[in-house]
Length: 310
Image (cartoon, rainbow, N blue to C red; front, side):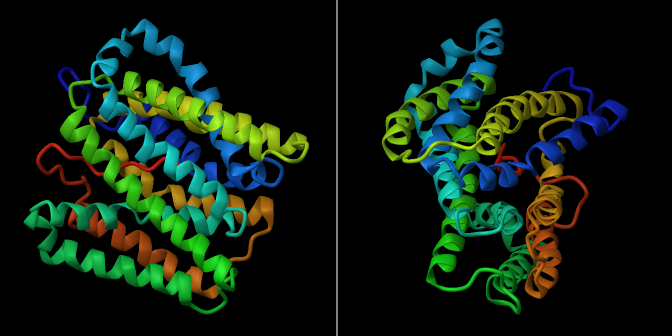
C-alpha cells in the first residue's frame, strides 16, 4: 500500500488491541444469541445489521461499483467467508463452549498452510513451518480427545467437526481475495457479500425462528452485527493502513485467549485439562506454520496470513 505508515506506534497498538477483542468476542455473543435465535436467524441478523452500518462508508468511498463488476467472485467469497461459517458456528455453539469454539477457529493458519502446499507453495515444507503444522494438529487432537473434554458424545464431535470446517472455509476465502478480487476495494466486497448473505438467510431465519427471542439474545445479535462485523472491518482497514497488510493479522493469535477468558468469566465455561495442554500447542503451531518462526507473517505470491472473523 503506497504511503502506508509501516510501524507499530501508539495508534497502531490501540487498533491492534481493539481487533484482538472485537474478533475474540463473537463466540461469546453467538453462544448467547443461539439460546433464543435459530442459527439462520443469527446469520441473517448480524449480516444485515453489519451491512447497514458499512453501506454509507462503501457509498462514500465509491467501493460498490468495482465489486459489482466481479459479482460472481464477490458472492463466492461471501458464501465461503460468511454464509457457510456463520451458520456452522451458530449450530456448533448450541453444543460447544464458546472458548473451545474460538480456539478451534484459530486453526485457520494450519489449513491455509496445507492449501498453500497443495497449490505448489513448497515453503510450507520448510522445517519450521512443517513442525508448526505437526504441533498445531497435535494440539487440536489434545483439545478434542484429551482429558476432561467438556463436550462428550456424538453431538459434540459433530459440532467440533463443524468448527474445523469453518476454519477450512476461512482458510480458503483469502485465496479468492488474493487471486480474483485483488483489484476490488475490500469495503465494497464485504458490504455486498453481507447484503447477499443476509437476504439469503432472512426467509430461512424467519421460518426457523420458533420462540420469542430474549433481551440478552437480541442484544448479543446486535453486538455481533455492529461490533463484531461492521466496526471490526472498519478498524481492520485502519490497522492495515497503519502497519501494512502483512503485520496486521498478528492479532488473530490473541483472539482465542479473549474467547476462552470471556467464556470462563461470563458464561462459567469449564477450562479442562485437555484445553490447558492443547491451547498453547495450537497457538504455537499456528504461529510457526504461518510465519516460519519470524515476528512478521510471510507473504507468498501476494497471499497474506488469513484472517478469520467469528
